[in-house]
Length: 422
Image (cartoon, rainbow, N blue to C red; front, side, top):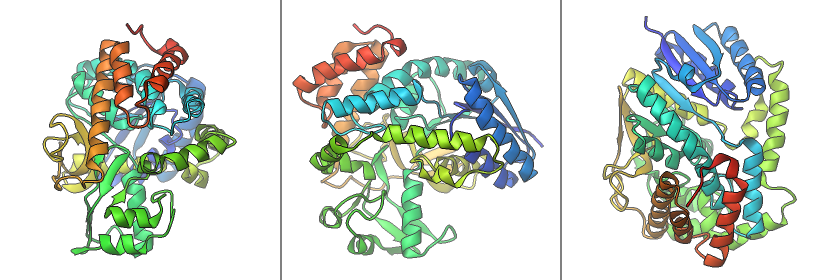
């Protein structure tokens, strides 16, 4: 039986134990598995991967785990490459969010200044990584979780990586919320028209056991019911669709600014505290701690493992992934990356066309795709001019008196990670 080789870039991620746990539980789909973890933070990787080894040993599954310290070693001969690094670590994520607070614009993870700065730091590593993937593992499937997931996946493709998709846990978390509320499970037949951009998708149809239940979902919504639906219920009923939770930063912009300005700490400071608690538990645990569910990225590994299972076995299941559009969303560029339902088979990912975007969402999604396209070009060309242009396109910035000084702050704060912009 052939060994399936995984290379994990960012092996010290807090989510690596969840990944190993799920592979072990689904080992029948893979047979023997070899996982090579690579991280620049050797101390953190040792703690995280120590737990991974104990989980694998406890499961009895034929999984071998090793740690390496270079991209080349991690990539050689891989069937699947998982990218989950965070360039600049937790402290630069905090710095990004504090800039958002300084300029009084909505911010978090991939939103506004955070998305721009995170992508710029990540792009130059992605360029290096892409060259090595093309050289060392050109036939491997690359699954990118590093945020902003869609931008990084599209950038990797632009650098020559042929088989790359982005993965996000948001669809998995929404389905989990709806399963609990409407009492259905994995064995039930369901499909939702989750489509748009990563962290900016809409659902205007949800079919369960052959019946359309979106009207029922919208009718039964409560105000700010969950972190998956953080909206006034009447807003969603008026729109006629379920917005991705990140729409709150656009549809409730002033409300979010008020909350962010009053908060004692930014979200990333809390995340750093949670990560510290988890790493302390990881030193002695032999299972995935319940505390991991407090992290927003919890469930990402399930999305990854389920997608890889379909790529590996050819079961042609539907997954919600970031991939090349190919006309699935007619309002967006054909070769641009989008997030959409995809049929995944043996060595194949195909987005499913679900019709045009709702009128209330299409203009915002189109503007954000234009912003993303310009941001990738700015990073590739090291162009300060194009970077300013992309910030003027962004609906949450779009004011020269904000964009110009914010640009200078981003470049100054991230100088160690960025080549010179001209």
